[in-house]
Image 1 (cartoon, rainbow, N blue to C red):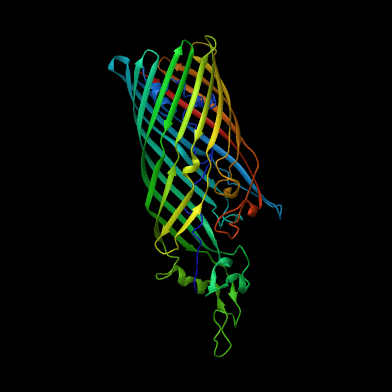
Image 2: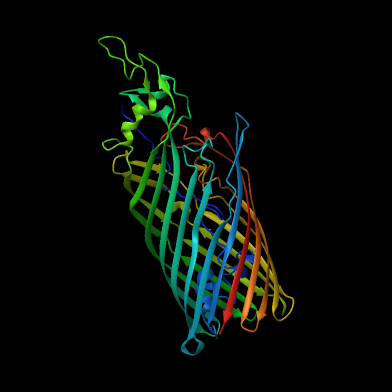
Length: 460
C-alpha cells in the first residue's frame, strides 16, 4: 500500500491579533492611542519597538514590564450544511519588557527591549471540518533588541537596534484516509467505500530556531509642538533545520469486507476481510512513511515601515497619526522537505498590507492622561489562502486607555482594544488542486477579539 500523507500546511503559522501574524500591541500607553507611537514616545521605554529614536534624550533610567491579553473569537459556517464551528475559547498573553539608560550627558541613550512582534495561536476542535488543513497553529517570535539612540541636534534624533529573534512554531492537523492511495497505481480508499473525512493520522509539528535583523528609527521636530517619525523593522529569514513531525495513528474502527481489492488473490479470486487499522499500522512502524521524522523549512518574517506625525494641539491635548506598511509578499510560498514524506511547496501569495492609525490623548492632571484611538487595516491573505490557520480579513479597531502615576517614580498604563474583522469567505478543504483558488472556498469566516493591556513603568 502506498500511503501519501499530505504534509499540507505544516509550519505555516498565521495571524491572531493583527494582519498576517503580526502583533502591534507592545505597550499599553501606545496601545491606548491605537498604536500611534512613531512620532511621539511614551515614558516607558516602549519606543525601542515603536521607534528606536524615541529613547534619545532620556534623562533618567526607565524600566517597564507589561503585556497584552488577547481573547479572540471566531466561527466558520459551511455554505452547504449551514453548520457553524467555533474557535476554542482561550486568552493568550503577549509580554514585553523595556529598559533605557541615558549616557553621554543626556545626548544618547542605550536600551534593551524584549517583545513579540509576531505571534499567534489559532485552535479549533480536533473534529472541526477543516482539521485536514490544520486545527491548531501556534507561533511565538520573541525579539531581543539592544538599542542605541542619539540626539543629532536639538530637534533630530536617530536610533538603531539589533534584533535576535527566538522563534517557535507548532501545527497540528489530521490526515484524511479517503484521499490516500490504497493500491497502486490509482485505487484510493475512497474507491473502496471509505467516506470522505475519515481520520487515520494526527500530525503534530514542532520547530524552533533563531533569526537576525535590525531596526532603525528617526524623529524630527521641525517646529515646537509638531513632530514627525519614521521607523523600519527589517525582514528576517528563519530556517528550521530540525522541525519534528510526531505522527500518531488514529483508529478508524473500519473492517474491509472479504474479496476487497487489497487482500484479493488474483489466482483464486478471493480474499479475506481485514481490519483497516491493522492494515494501516505498518505505515506507522519503522520502514513506513508515517513514522516520526524531521524536516526543513523556512519562515520569512516581513519588514515594516511606519511613518507618522504628532501635534501638541493644546498644553493638554495631543493628536497623532501613523501610516503602516508591512511587506507580507515575503510570505509567498512555503517549501517543506521531510525525511520520508514527499517534498512540497505551498503557495501562500500574501500581499502587501497598509494600515492607518489615528490617536489622541488628553491630560486630566499632571499625573493622569486619558487616551483613545482608531485604526483600519487591509488583509494580507488573498481570497484563495483564507484557511482555518488564518481566517483573517480587513479589520477596524477602537481603543481607549488611561495612564496615571501610582507614586513619584512609578506609573501604570492601561488599555482596552476591540478588533472587528470583516466577514471573509474562505475554505475548510484543500480543493484537490496544487494551486489554491477562490473557487473552492466553501464557507464564511467571522472573527473579532478583545484585548487588554497593562504596563508598569519605573523611573530612577
